[in-house]
Length: 162
Image (tube, rainbow, N blue to C red; front, side, top):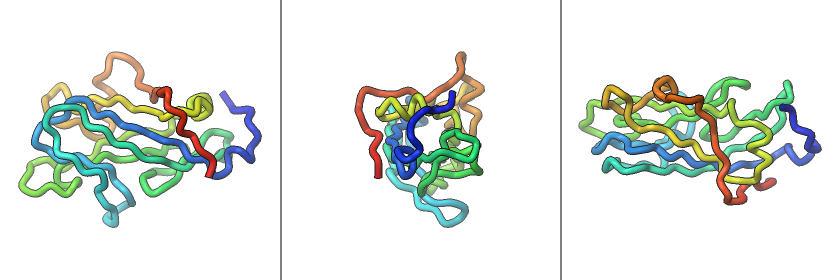
């Protein structure tokens, strides 16, 4: 559904995102990736104890050429129409002496104007461990769900114009 908001409101808007990684593999480091390619920084680094981990950050959003939301900022990866961000795992998160070197990919392209207009923090609830018992990575985690996955709005009002 295309939005009917004035475009001046959408230029330079920021939205708040929260990722809840459910019961990730204990003893492994997880971090939000800031930057691209080999020039990135692992931020909000956390070592899992097997309990849920949370990451919170903001991304910019504006109207794309096709009228859909388009995302930007230091955490955003990928081409227009297929934006995402990474949760780094193991060595990618800066952990030494671990066998894990992975990235979990979280899509932004499924965030709708309705979700953005909810003025809430958008939450991604993601299983931290795959059916094989290993840390989830890439988009593989989405294949293991028994229902279509989507971002959810929470009650906190966090969409702020710049």
